[in-house]
Image 1 (cartoon, rainbow, N blue to C red):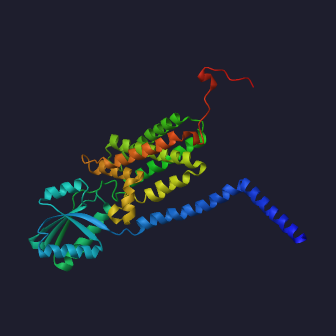
Image 2: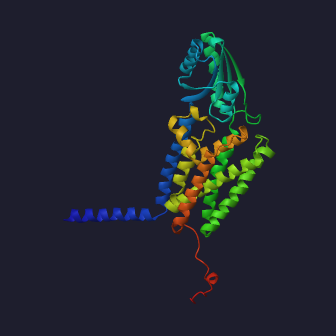
Image 3: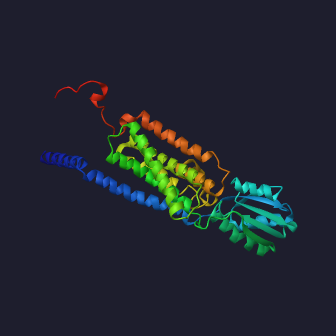
Length: 357
């Protein structure tokens, strides 16, 4: 019986220590240590998986000329074998039509096969995807040398001089995404008493000012990109607003742990799959598909078209951003009573006096 009593006392003490630990600041600190360690691994892994070894999966390519001849077919098959991927051929009757497809971002390059496939002219578009253009420009002549095909390579839509690797758009979009949700975090910490309407309006305010600051710095101050300023500013501001409201939505749903889904969606999945650092044909297939439906990918796509394909802007990336803005604002508004902020209405505003204490 003595042993039983001692065991019960020991179990009671253990439960008491565990309960005290759960109530202490050491419990959330320990959880955060584990979460941050896991987040560090996921962050490194997601970027390494998508960017460390870009491999072509499918490259949409326009072809004109004698591509149906035996020599042309042999060359295209040899190119696919060398790239270890599928060169998705889109035939066009004229060179002008093929180049229009580049402007519409339907293809990444144009092969014109001449003399029954014994000569080829490859027009790459560095602006469509620097990594894809570089890969094709390096591989196509090597394949031609093996098959006895003379290959001439030209870049018909090069990147701007201040952006030789085509990364500036990715960086400015990344800045808009990160500052967007960091701004929402700071509003939650330093301006907790904002009402829902005020919180949305202040998110709009810092998004507009922040988007302007990014565009002005990159274009006017550094001269890295020649931006269509008004359109680029709009895209950056919309990106910052969406990113801020996504955090606000998750803060409404998950409280103090809102940073976890925000970081996962926007940074761990969204940025590597955006196509900004590595063109989507070189991304792992799931990322290439998912990225276009997430705010970072939509921002990169809209900005990329605005800068390098003016007059050919598509509605899809704006619809994606607008959809996320509507979703996040709606969730926040419907469940705003759960958001860890806001303030009680001032009794004087309702025309009644506060009861004496």
